[in-house]
Amino acid sequence: MDPFFFLSDPAAIAEFFRALVYGTPWGIVILFLFTLFANASIVFPILVEPIVLIVAAFAPNLETAIFVGVLTGTAAAIGEMSGYILGLLGVKTLKKMSKVKTEKIFEVGESLANKGMPIIFIFSFTPLPFDLIGIAAGVIKYDPKRFFLATWLGKVLRYILVALVGYLGMEALPWLGTILGI
Image 1: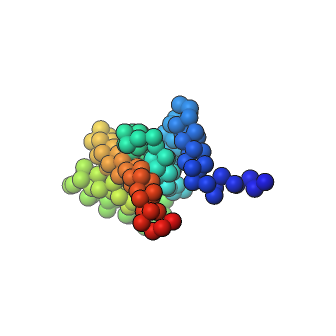
Image 2: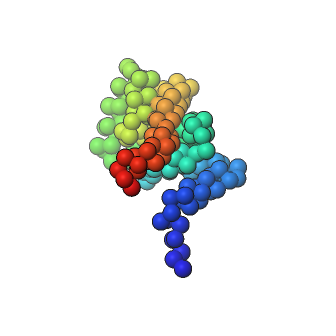
Image 3: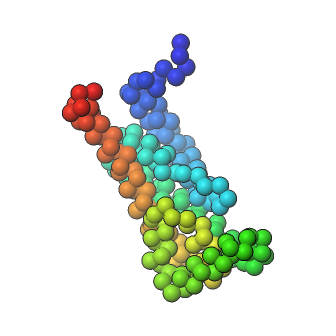
């Protein structure tokens, strides 16, 4: 018997993900922690979007899919505070970084001093390299509450959008299959 037999059956795949994430309270806790640690990682970028897309695709209803977006966005915002804290640690940390990266951080810091929240929001909403923004905000001692609020808004909106694409995309598959004759 093929150990991956369930991969050929869409209903089995859906049931597997539903049981994994929604079958116990631990599924949501694990999703939260995974997202938090993935966004706290500065050295190794870890994509959370595919996980959010899949988890939301198998959500039992639209409200749950939106909850997945809010949950992962909140965890991502908390995780991104690691870059801010690294920037607060300041000069000792910057001395260990390359000169080019250090110059870039100070350039970003100057922009943050002038246009703060909109820049933080845009970078947190898009897949642009957000770690530099966090480090620069910490270096210039940008208000941590404003930094977190702008980061949270951007990340939550981003992950709600990803979750909606997953959920509504899965809802559209049967309709699309009928049109394509699959």
